[in-house]
Length: 306
Image (cartoon, rainbow, N blue to C red):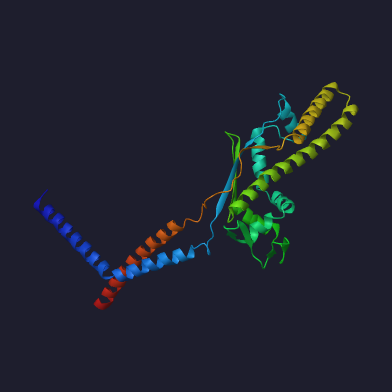
């Protein structure tokens, strides 16, 4: 390295050191505004995240396996081809169950059979930890008499809130369905999760039972009129498949799912993370304070210079 290059390098380092010293000097002189702004951001976030403004949210979850049904070699093919009741395959039943839970039709059915679901979803204000009771908005809902004091929320409006709080997914490789519900009450979160799980299973049970009954009625009427032996044999196989479906819909506590990890009452809230929000707000205030002090200094410097 030549002497000229050494001189240039030393000069750059000296200039950088001078610039850093000047920068720190500016920030040190403006330390009071920086501290005040940081403190204001931190305090505002802390007040905003207080339980009175942002209540704790509890999450109850559950895991279910998909029940395997049917042992016939051509059961699935027959079901898919002739009746459309693809209920014998775990790969089909899992997504079917998930799509049902996510559907507007199911939600409408759910709030009709579970009268407590809609008020808990839409007008719950806070949770009393001592009495373990849910407090409703008294201007909108009379909890004692279970009566709406205003127009009941439309199911499509409530559906948006339902989808926001409910999470469900199907894991194909394990044939497992996971579901969770968020709510300000840990007890209600568990109850809502249970209501969704068992009502969706019952709804699919009833739909398949009805479709299977209609298929049996048609097949038993159509077989005597069929002259071709091959078709009569195929239709007899379909009757056996429908009888199998009828049997599966009428036995067992559940039809589509089997509980692996049932819903529970959570002990601790999962959101909001108040400490993280307060610290993040404080850091944002620090950065804002530094930028403010530097802008004030350089704008004032150039203003006086002109």
